[in-house]
Length: 255
Length: 244
Image (cartoon, rainbow over all chains, first blue to last red):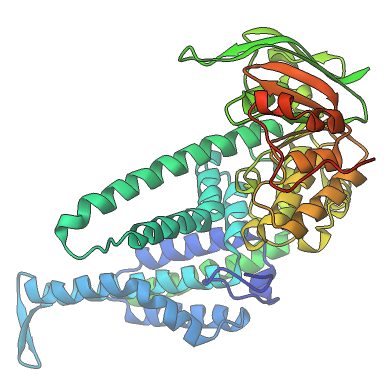
């Protein structure tokens, strides 16, 4: 509680990266990800250069490496999947530390790991320098379907309310001696989930009434002036532009 | 001209349950009126008619001379400020400022004028410092005050509050009363909190069984124990109407 409470992905600050309009940053991250994905997996130097670029963005945004590292946990499932590929992969095999691994599998694992890591780090940097609601304003500005933006906005607003309701239901269950210990208790949990869904649905209806009462006509009014100057677009797009330059140079060097 | 005129309003829910059986009431500009009634008397159903969320099965609702109908909805919703019972239903935007701005922005205000309206509304409920905080980080009492501000920002002809004192601790209850008393706007307060009605409203209406069963000075109605008992209303234990 309190004014100092922020979303856990967001790192308050006033750096260049924080001040750029969200639509510029969103587009820059998207373009960067496309360039990364388009890079052939054999071009190691290009991937190293992309990592250096992200390092520069992190420095510009004053985002410490520890902040990025902690949030990269989200990638773990992909890493596990990538580790499995060389083991179960087909084709020519090589021996690494006594393990027989598929060569094609190793390449595939590297491809997934390198590209996913770069994408995840870019997203973490975006989230660390942009508040969630501002990211949504940027998405609205980029003409993402208004319905999707509104759904995301309500999720952001009502997540805590619904989690709180869920917590109260759990307390109510446990106060009457219920503890989920084995599969036979699943129906109870399922009924709670159903009740939570209905409560949330009814809340949605009441919120809709409240919106209608204040003149809602299906579109969220855009209140803040969020236009971006050419210089701001230039700054933000420097990241994908540099990545594209790396890709181009690598292509020239290799063909 | 009266702020609100309701004539012979009747309504049945789609499942056939009749909730209102011909409600008549009028509220003059600047009045603060309490609408009292037990649970299930049709209070909320009546409130939903005041800004056209429900449309009358029979009868009319007129807000400052404008009849509530399909083609006047936009205007009516701007003139009738509805404050819902649960502030979480009312505060749906990511920050307090955005939420208060939602109504006026839908009405077309932008830029400096919008900022001025928002700050003015927040100042009137004493919540200006909280402008940039997310609503879910505020206390319940603060959220209810912001909910009042979201409606004030639309400069309504009449403020309609649904159970304004529910879930408030005594201090928050007193603060809200002070704010409501300081507002220069017509108020219709729907409640079964009789002392709160006495504190804030000179005049009260009793809605019971889907009709207005009594209409008069709050003090007189609350002093009539038989009348209250007939409509399932009771003063809290130990409470007596203070002598004038």
